[in-house]
Image 1: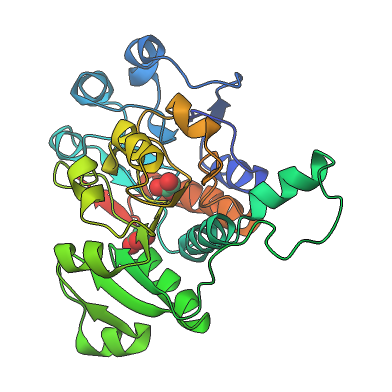
Image 2: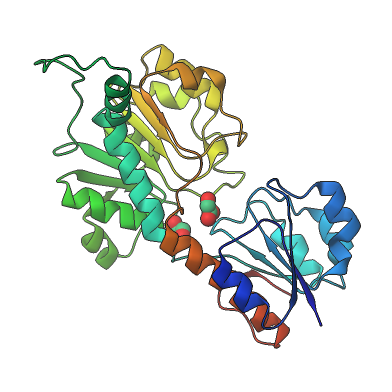
Length: 321
Ligand code: GLV
Ligand code: GLV
């Protein structure tokens, strides 16, 4: 029987499904498999279910070549895999789009409201026993209604986020590599602008970009200087889009007002100074972390692996022989 390796325990549904075609082995540890392990054992399986923290580069792929037929990444993003090289090695790579679109857009929205209305600060205030009386000017925040939101990256998640913003009476700008079709602009109520305009006019900017050489360090001190001093930055895309040390400087010197982050430049490490600021809300990469999304993702990776086993082209293929 073909063997499948799952590099971190995923919801049961997918594991059960996977075992319909494979002998399934799961990393028993509460930590990522090491690179050394991948290099030593990569050739022993015909399918891998991988996580964002697994770096599948040329060297690892060369070990897998001729043995592994599919790498099903348990994520929509796949910047952890060298997909061009995977294709050259005859390995199919799949991802899990769509099912996590709403979940991730909701987390972006929750971060926006939390940072603007100071939800987390308020919670801490109560827990620390500081709530002694109602005060006219206690923890005043900013309303989203009437504000301009700038959406960077108008894929599925960006568009889902736009819909939520429209419901909250925000004015919506977006910038994307490709402009949306007119009917999609109408459906999302979003106006296309160039990057500079988005920076200059937005009260909140939300990042929904994949990580590529072009998007890495898109936000540096220079970028923050072009934003409103009253602006908030939300990132649920990929951490390295922001140069995190520069974000810290921008927040400390008042170049921008606050930030809500779900992803970090060197995850799981967080630039220390960010932890000390009250105007940041920090989450541990839980964008797709709804029960529904994560369960469906587990079924999707299993189905992709079974498809390849049965000689079918899987639905969400991002690279293949
Ligand atoms: C999560 O960050 C994903 O890419 O699914
Ligand atoms: C990801 O699914 C995106 O298109 O934003």
